[in-house]
Image 1 (tube, helix red, strand yellow):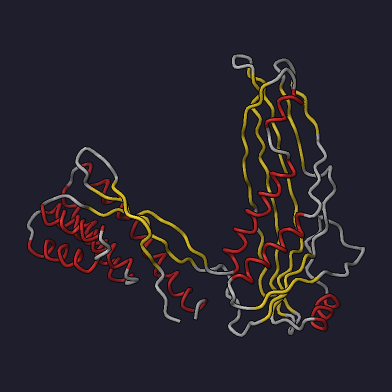
Image 2 (cartoon, rainbow, N blue to C red):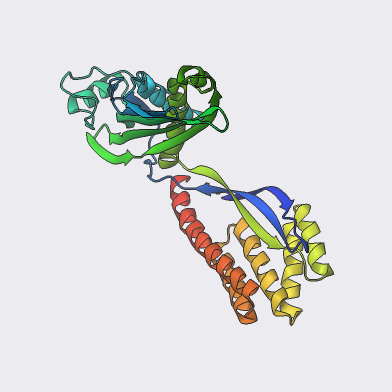
Amino acid sequence: MKFLSTSVILCGLLLSSCQTVSVLTIEVKRPAEIVIPENVSKVVVVNNALNQPDDFGHSASVFDGGTIKKSNPAINTAGLAEEFTSELAKRLNSLKWFKVYQQRLARSGSKTFLEDLPLSRNQIREINDSISPDLIISLDRMLFESDINLRYQPNQYVYKITMDGRAYPSVRVIDPKGLKVLYTLRQQDSLFWQDYGSGDNVQEALRYFPAPQSCFDDLAMYSVDKMMKKLVPYSDKVDRIYYISGNINMHDAANYVKANRWDEAASIWQYIYEHSKRKKLKAFTASNLALYMEISDKYDEAIEWAEKSRSHFLEMKSEAAQSEAENLNSYIRELQRRKSDSQKLDIQLR
């Protein structure tokens, strides 16, 4: 399937005293970490993770202005593994690439919540008998941790309240016909919350902070976001710059960009590059042409123009020019990544 891996979604000026550059936000396609086989038309998502006890993995520290009190609070995270798999199935199904089902498992009583064990052959056969999927995605372990801190700030008469929450999902992608694990995907996800609560005591101050269970709901959905990027291609927004000053023709080209008339802008930049003797203009227009090639998904040409721009900046010797050359180094690495990503996407989206 032919596709454009880059699309322009926003153009805005980066304001400075001379307005040398403008910032462009583009949406790019990124490949998934894995390759789902092309013949997959039916997927089953299952929850093979056991709920952890309320008193596992959580710590709290309270400083009331005099002493520090530490404890291990009980936080209920039961049901979050099921929420994770339900949301994962929902998002995968929304792609309409394959039909996605969920199935409850008859779990063995020997597994503990800490064990990261794959589905047994009997469990896979059970799924095969009921649905006969082409692929199984199994959440085999889901652990949560948190560090909650309350610090009284006497100068402001408030408590500073923070919570660092972490989730550790472990997912396996299984070929049910061959009874084998294709991929094992593990990640550590974290979110941080901060607020201030007024009051004469800790309990009153905590009224201003969301309940830990609510925070973990958000964290579970964030973990789904991250896991989706491992399973299927996704869109990412990145900022790019292009140069708009140098002469009146550069301003004309910038106006064409604002009107999304990139071919006309590129013709002006090409003309300036070929006919100008000023190194700065050559550096500016070469960089702009690299961007034009990138949004046209022509990565070899984009890298070539970016390298030309870097060379012209290096020739100028000034500190500002050397800084621009360093920026071009980073851009060239990003273009090389996009070239590699494009090759992977051709396989994943065909």
